[in-house]
Length: 109
Image (cartoon, rainbow, N blue to C red; front, side, top):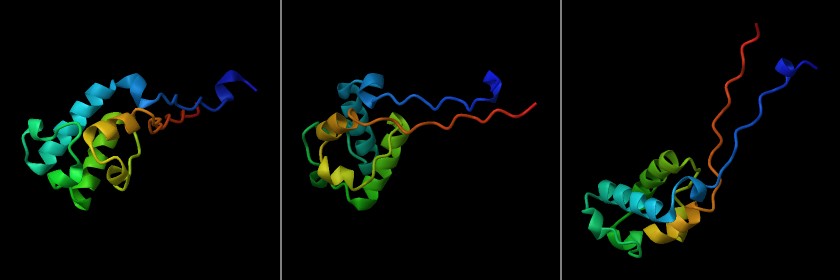
């Protein structure tokens, strides 16, 4: 089979921790949560529970969507109940592989 007839290799999946540090993730989570809730960033401490901040299920869906875009993951809003602080969530995200980006299919010539 000629090399150009082989299907393209799949995308590499690098854990989020190798792309962004946990501290950077924690800061980004805090920034996004503060923006969603209309709070000052300093109000979203690393260890302050999202529930205490007022992050309800709708806000958690928005936060999960934003973090998926930022970190290339597939977080579900339900996971934000299990990892209920910026620090816990950042450490969890650091273990996740990114969502693979689709590789464009070459057009036959």
